[in-house]
Image 1 (tube, rainbow, N blue to C red):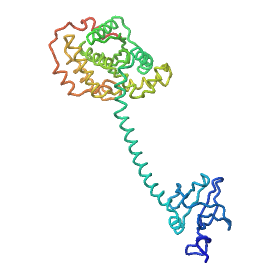
Image 2 (image 1 turned 90 degrees about the vertical axis):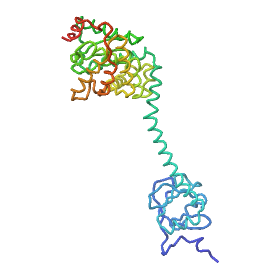
Image 3 (image 1 turned 180 degrees about the vertical axis):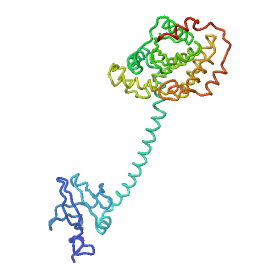
Image 4 (image 1 turned 45 degrees about the vertical axis):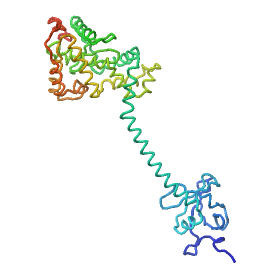
Length: 369
């Protein structure tokens, strides 16, 4: 007796074969075919068999959501069979136990992929927010000061260009400023020489580049009412120098690839210079770094027999009046009443000599005129 299912194309509730589309894996042409279910799945085109796919070798392939797209592990890698008819899909599932199993595994694998993707995203986030800062903190103290000086030198011209480039050069004022910075360096036990310059800029700021290049802006000098106010702010900046905060920020922002590139001589490329300068000018120190720099400044002023309170008064006076929070003391050194209160608690009667004499202070105040 003839087994109609074994030789006839599938005829689900119709006299017409159920449609299917076949891609032979050689060309991208759609071939409209019918399917014959025997010992193997036969693919029929215009009454002739063009391919035979064993049921155990059938696998799901990615396709449209409303279609079953199959591949065959014993056929060409790119060959595909696309089926949209529901009855045909059910028949294939009924005959291919491996396809059913693979379908379940596929759902499982998809779930695993989603879970692993989420885990990878969480790992990347953890590395970004915790791992990179931690690595930067560990690497920064290992960078030689000779290299750190090179980084500061390559940013020096860019900094001057950003702020007008004019260096205040009155001899008496330069001598007084150099004396103040050297006094602070010795009290803070910095073992590197410091280069000092005052820029004729109205921005109320002071900062130090890697390697010990210390800048004071005339805008801050103009607002200072006595040497102790200015000395405390400069001591705070020297705290960032001795703690290598600038190098930590560069490594954190640019990654170790930036550090390695510089170590191998790429310190003059325009991209590296611009990146380093932007990172330094837009530096935003952590609360811990700011606290440590404050503690260093307080310690230095105490060693000199001077009070740190004037520093807090100068900074709070500037930040309290400054509406523009772009570039300046407020941008990179957030001041709060709590910090002023802390410096007030550390107030001591003056027991040491004045950092600058009255004549030196007046010469420093007039350095840009």
